[in-house]
Image (cartoon, rainbow, N blue to C red; front, side):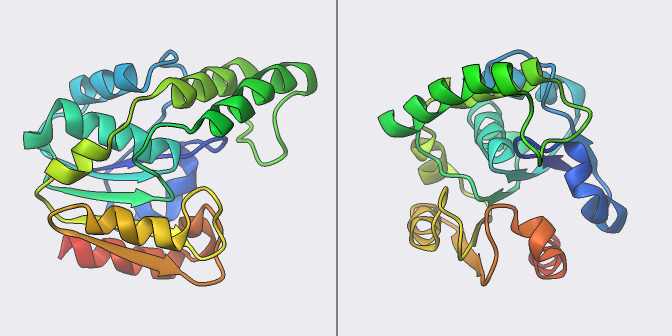
Length: 200
């Protein structure tokens, strides 16, 4: 089994350096794959063989759910980190539609990985905006599923994380107090303990 680490936006695969050093696996780069999360999932399934323990942060979680939809038999366990399963709300789509021209006009946000171009950030926003609802994937996923949320995250609130975990046959939620959207960076040791528990 290979641990596949799927990064969030606007970060890159290096957000998982501590976890890869500790647990191994493959930190996959999502940029440069077009503007379809389903397409990203197809590419990753071709690139990484065998069973995949998926750990996805935000955008990476959306990708993990797309991988599970396409090849559920290859995914024994799943960790979603600040990732809702539903499609974007109309308000969220409107936010992304406003963000895309702003990125082109003003450049990358301050917290963006230096290796990522503006057009790659734009393509990723388009992919997230246009993704479908994956709630049915959660309902059908039989393996262990952990939903991680920062107590101060607005994209996936603790209550939403608990509801999402409750929708899975074998799901549970973990809330990281004092953390925001990227709790694996803000609370790395606590996050690593969750990964170690799932692996055990």
